[in-house]
Length: 353
Image (cartoon, rainbow, N blue to C red; front, side, top):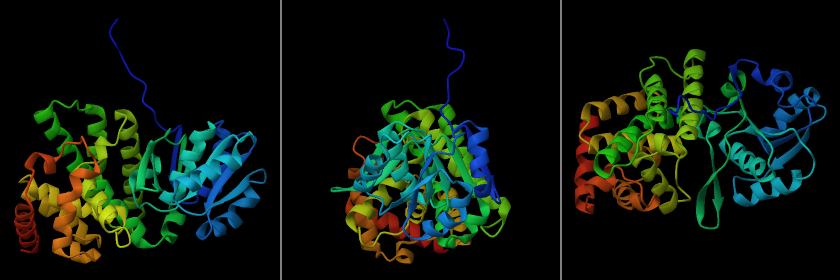
């Protein structure tokens, strides 16, 4: 019998608007995620406390748990704390680290997870991946994607603008990642999931070609939707391929080689994507990436995030080791140190002209 359709893992509800957080209790009840209101709320010790003061009266039956950091140890501690307490759901209320900890803890105890994002710094807010610090640096762990996604534009506006702009770099890097995926298909036969690729590419293009800035609600909604769609694309493909190529390998290399100095994830992958597009000969697209990144106040050269050209060359050279088995433009070209240095000099000259 032919396969006529397939099930797509996705949130039951995606709610993006001003004041969305005030509607959280009603939303979870209406969607039958938590009619009782018995929730485990994971928050940070910093800004999370202010959100707790605001939400606690609206969620009288919720228990609140402070998360120290974005490590695997914190995720395990949270899981141990909530195990056996019959919560309807775990709610990760915060940025990427809090959401990743909550995703892992919820998966460990087998309850649904609700993501309430307080910034838009990267596409992990709705992905089936939990990125956590561990003894070896940082690891990515497969988890169920959130059952609900809530983004309150009023709260997003209270976040440092750098943490919102960072998501722009992560979103547009999808375009470079899809180019790497298609390159791998041509040279290694790797299967491309057309639906996941279309979703991730469309998400990236919607941000890349939008004329507004983070000062506009319309743009924030487009950015938030793009990050959510990217997470769903990863759920469809079953891995991070729709959103992770050479751009992310370069970012991971920054994290591993210079852990005390690495910039925000979206800043690094945006720069990595612009350079990767240049490497594959797509100079017009690379120039457009650089133009858009600049317009949003994002880096297009390593010096703008505190790295020298030589350190960038080292990161690009090391990048393929961060994702063994993944084929991107970096693995395809297999450049020597001198070739990377020459390519970077040409990239820097091109985007400055």
